Amino acid sequence: MRPPPPTATNSVVSFLNSGLSRAARRQQVVEITISRPDNSIEMQSSEPGFIRRLQMPEGVSIVQVLPQLPENPENPDATRTFFLYPGGTVPPLGVQLINRRNVQRVVRVDPITGVPRVEAPE
Image (tube, rainbow, N blue to C red):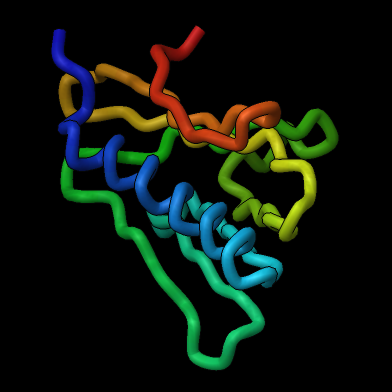
């Protein structure tokens, strides 16, 4: 089996990397919003006009946003927001993707290194 198209997982890794880099480089808080219903990830900061959006390509879907929230199991489709603080601890965020062949991958930001990585879901 093949993983979701490399462009999808690589795009998510690149998108998250750019948010982490922007927070550190520009000393700005960066907001990352992951929306299952919209099948997209959005990034914005306090800089006027700075908004970036990554739409998942056709055939690739966001299965879940990690970590799962125990207080909201009845609404797994809730949009989730994470904040990247300059010099702060990276939140333990992850995005699980699935392709048309039902192959899944997780793009997860390592909270220790702050580096996004791709892994097979557990």
